[in-house]
Length: 124
Image 1 (cartoon, rainbow, N blue to C red):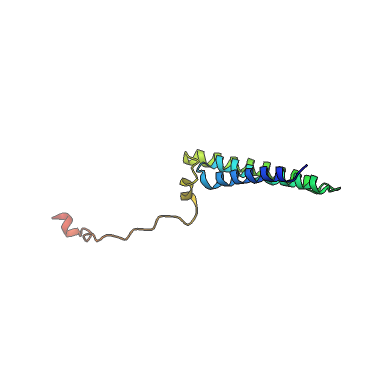
Image 2: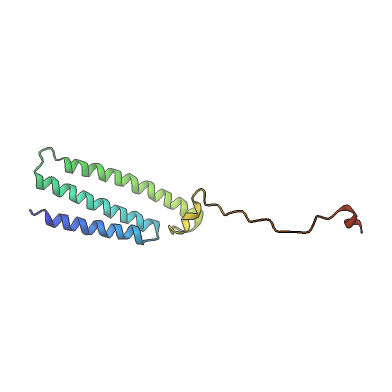
């Protein structure tokens, strides 16, 4: 088997995932794009493992570890997205920047107002 075929396919998958992460606004689509990128890495690991004829099959073992980490990541990520959607009503990544700490609106300067009413003005 030529190494070029899985390597090109993995590069295309990774570039598609990278485009999805950079261009999408929906948090669920961003998570799906991250999964595409991880699958591209897994394809490279298995392809190089077969190409190098590793007796320990380290590439396949690392691929299984990556799949387990990806499953945990997508579970936690979806839970966070669902909580944010329930609280905010949107999963738009650009609108979620308001929830970050330290981005509170700046206090406005007090405006010049008349002096408070004195007791003599109130009775008059």
